[in-house]
Image (cartoon, rainbow, N blue to C red; front, side):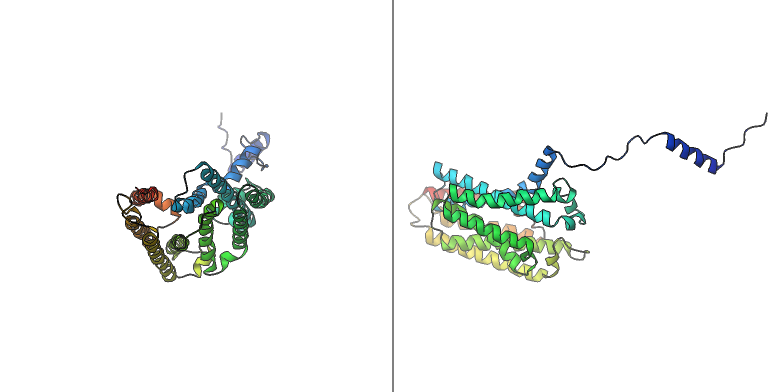
Length: 330
């Protein structure tokens, strides 16, 4: 009996098509759906950038410098100011991500942000951000000093203006980010009615400018020679200019801290050792160590730099210990 002729490719193709029509797909792609309450809540928290909340610890700077940190009233007020600043920062992040959602979807990494990825709908991001921005100054006026409420309102106005336009203006973008750090450092003093030393303000302001410009310099170095930058404004800066800025800021911060320690130290013989004056050594070493990463172009987020480098973290602990002994007058 003669063997059956093999099926032609056309016949096989026809049979395969018929089989696909009769057999449904096993794993069809699920249709897009609205995020559930849990996924939405997680997305809102992620958009609020919990990793950035550590910056708000600066609210304890002025009370710590004045030696008025350890009391129930001070700790309660500082915890409240920390929470209010966190709410304001979260409001800014939510509104910023909602505004930039379309652009973020075309970015290789920012497209994973909850708003750009659709985990948090744009109207929800706007609504939650706007609610936080409205409630935080009101809560500050009710629960803390009026000066804190005014400071938070000014912070929100400045940061929202930065999201809309100021982040595209040369030099002004550096000033706005630096002022945000300075406002955090001032908030604790205003909440407790502590006079702010001029040297404290200069040291804090230029220290913040040092870290901000070092971060921008690192971004510019890493993006050199690549197509596109994470910040469009980086193409307007030169690495030489940004290097000049962080070097200038580091020098002014060191000078101001030394003048403050020498002027505010009082009688160096009241304690076991002149701890406040000795803390200048640790402060200068910290600036020099941080400058190593700035010079290499690896000074990204300040908290990452400090936590990643054990030597820098150790220097910071030594500085805190020296300053604590100076405040305790030991």
